[in-house]
Length: 386
Image 1 (cartoon, helix red, strand yellow):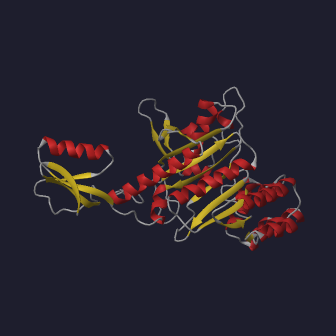
Image 2 (cartoon, rainbow, N blue to C red):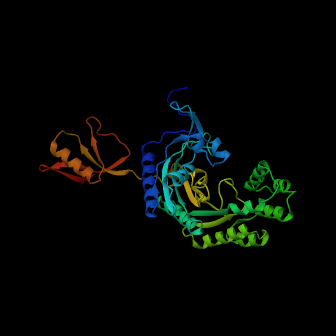
Image 3 (cartoon, rainbow, N blue to C red):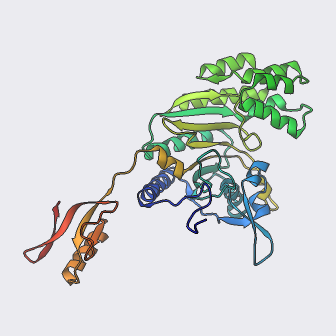
């Protein structure tokens, strides 16, 4: 095998795409800052027990492990940034009130999430801690939509669900972890026969409610159907009311609902959402409420705080938006004349891109579109259109 061949599902990012990703990163961070979110930069690796504290088995399986040559302890390369941000909120900041945090950095996965996906996503996310009400869910939803609009993604569809619905139907039932996992898996693929077999021993009200979820997806009319077909358990009533309220508040996207979608059931505690765009292979954004995610990081104080947030992969996002045009630039000759160097320096300080044509490379093309050139006229260096 050639030494330059990269591992499967790992790839270099070449100039035009790298520039586009960086421009998107800046836009998204600026959008989050406009909402008052503070930027944090967690480390790429941590002690494994810290990195996986409070997370599920799925994240453990996605995490690369290695041995620290200094301490001999096992380290992990983060597969998701949210546990780290929860640690920062709980243990380092320790604020009693509201905290808004955002981040952007690489994560590593032992396996691709789906065919053709990268194992090195560039994860951007935003999270709000300290508010249990639906206002925080709405803010995070609106921020996610604004981030996609800033990236010039159009024709958005927002899919809403709530983890409390399935959790309420399973609460108090005599089920092993394996049985619960199988029920969630049957709901995920909407398999009524498998679900009926798995829930045959449950009380009729709970079994019928779970079977109803297989068909409870579609437009906002699904909420009316759910109110009629699901048992009137307090958490279900509250979840449906909150979904209806959010549907009336969110702007800028078509709405759909999938009340049986229980992906991330071990992680999410309330509203869940995914945002899709025309032409994208999968959801561009996923997020929701995960109250108590930082509780395990509290030292001597209670840190079981409400939390809601979202994340996206900038590498997937850049593939879903139109290619960025070449950056306009000024072409300049290469000379050692002080007046020319001063003119070039002044243009660059003003924010212009100036590409000097080195001797022998006059006809080479790169990703910059030189629509102007710097020429000498009457002893002065001036710009003229090409």
